[in-house]
Length: 340
Picture 1 (cartoon, one colour):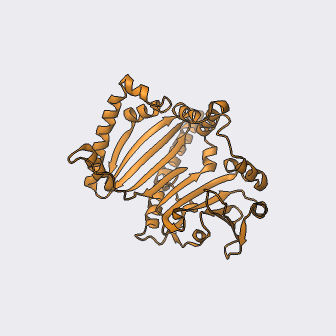
Picture 2 (cartoon, helix red, strand yellow):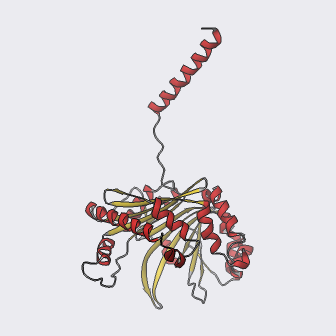
Picture 3 (cartoon, helix red, strand yellow):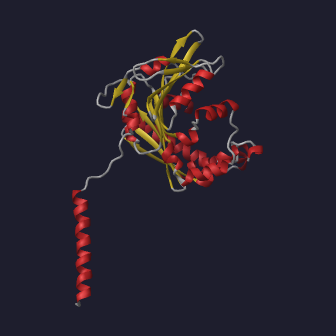
């Protein structure tokens, strides 16, 4: 063996040795719960997390924006807000988490409470000026002054608090800005702890929605009917979760239901598999196709044929991969013809 061959062999052996050393001594990198949701309101019953910065960098979303053309018409009120504050969510919002809290009775009836934590680029002085010109009330607070808008329309109250140069809290009432938050080191049995745990399971996905299933009393179904079986299974779903993760030109979607027991999860997975087969068969009927929205048909057909149903303990999950062309049809159909 000549000298060059010996050198090449030595380099190859060195690279192999380094590779196996790395495999042996490195630790796998698991997704980390975003710092934005490291603590949650203890009363929260649902949450939606969006990493807008990560989504803007994905080719898939650039294609969807192109399919939407000019996009939906924006209200003059929002355009004035952008002009006076310099903030446009499509450009300046990086991350946000929205918490839904139990509705509370008010003089005008039950109102849904929503609290959002946002990160991005905000000009506090422009927000203060906008508030002073548009009927906003500024209240001092230990964590930063609170700007409250109480418009005389159906939109209701909006409270804003800048707690850091790049972080702003939004809420449907000033009281929500003072709610106690639950750090991730203090897990308990309340709803906030449950949200935190399930958000952590989907850490790394730029779009996640998690919530506790509501106890809704449906209309009574005929005894021993399929509807009665479905209602019984639905009552045993305690939590739901939806995540979306773009990869190239594909959007990987996972929809999960968490039952009260493993037995209920088995029954739910069997029922979903049967429903999937029935749907795939029904879609072959031309009459069914004519009754459906043409933009939705490719997605529904894809889910019926390629959706993967799996079970893990008391959780059942449906996974599906949607292409940019399938999604573009839906996005473009939501835009009025004159704007396309």
